[in-house]
Amino acid sequence: MLKFEKAGFSYQSQKPRRGNKAIDSGSVLKDISFEINPGEFIVLLGENGAGKSTLCKLANGLLKPTTGRVLVAGEDTRTIKVSRIARKTGFLFQNPDRQLCRNTVREEILFGLEFALSGITSGAKSKAQASEELEQEKKRRCQEMLDLFRLDGDRDPFGLSRGERQQCALATVLARRPELLILDEPTTGLDYRECVTIMDIIVKLNSSESTTVFMITHDMEVAADFGKRALVLSDGQLIGDGPVREILKNKPLLDRASLLPPQIASLALRMNEKCFDNVFSLDEMSAALEKNVSGKAI
Image (cartoon, rainbow, N blue to C red; front, side, top):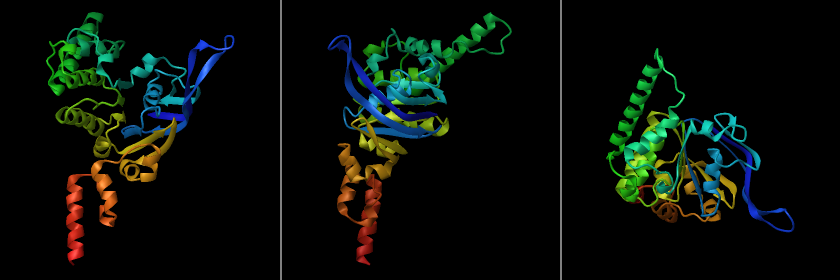
């Protein structure tokens, strides 16, 4: 679904120095190589400034690699239009206000569908019939998203709470049914209930509809609870790639990336007992404690 082949990226300064030569502000990403298969749930971890957002923009064609290649569904992002990539990928910005632009929630969702469904033909016998079928499909998908997120279609998006705006932005993305869903910190600024609502929907899409999920997160609990595989960036380089739980208990790797494991996992690591090796939740901690106490009593 997504493949990076020794991909690198650097921003060039717009201000010339010494004649007309542009200044290279330094590489943001260096020799990144990995592959994501259809249906995977990947979390992308790393400290601020590691290059995570830049990597995601390479993944959906908003940026083009300066070295190497990025392939989406087998197509090189340097040679195809962003609009073509957008038919297969959905991108949720960290700040929902950067995605919202219409007067009502309903218009917002329909706006995204206008592009996504354009050019799709049906078995209709006439243009009028085809147009009618297309409008019905837009309305159906829009209502599906309103029901899923329990949003009022007549509300002004900018009159919603931060969490509701995030859900509205995600609804506009999901209405298009992307094969690859790219999420930049989808739970930032959300309370617990809003976080659970969004993550439950994402997990359902991944498990029941095989949507490939590629998610940046700083929340190690979210990574541990929902991710299956983790990529770790540090200083523009990929330094870790493996099962989430293996990554989150690799203290040398986390230290190198300036990351902390989830609180329960961190406590388990300090217990220094074999039965605590794979503890990442309260339930798992309780079970491990019972086993440890029982074993010592025997």
